Image (cartoon, rainbow, N blue to C red):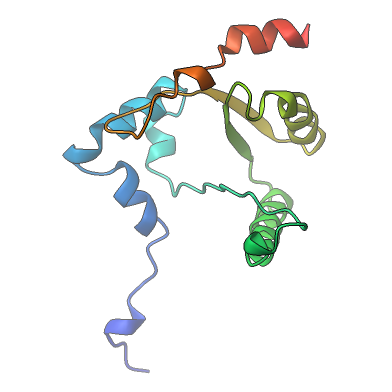
Length: 143
C-alpha cells in the first residue's frame, strides 16, 4: 500500500507543540512549570478540556457530543491503567462554589485534581484581578 502525504504518521503532540514548544512559548512553559507540571509532562501530549455545555442553552448544544467523546476517552484511559490529572483554574465569583464538587468528582473517580490560581500572561483584555482566588483561601474553606 502506497503512503502518500495525507498518510503521514500521526503526531499526538501536534496541537501541544503550538502551545509549549519553541522560544516564543517560554512564558507558557514557565506558567505550566509554576503550577507543578514537570518537563517530562510537557513533553507528552497535552489534553485540555474547556467545556461550558448545558442542556438549556441551544447555542452550546453542539458541544455535547464533543464533551461526551472526551469523557469516553478519559474513561478508556483510566481503564487502560493511565493516571488522570485534571487541572482547573479557581476563579472568584465564577466557579469557587463548584470547587468542592470538583474535588469530590475527581477523587471519586480516582483522578488527581490541581487547582490553579488565575495568572494573566501577556496581553489580555481587561483586568482580571477581581477573579483572583487565593488557593490558601480555598484550602482554609475545605477544613
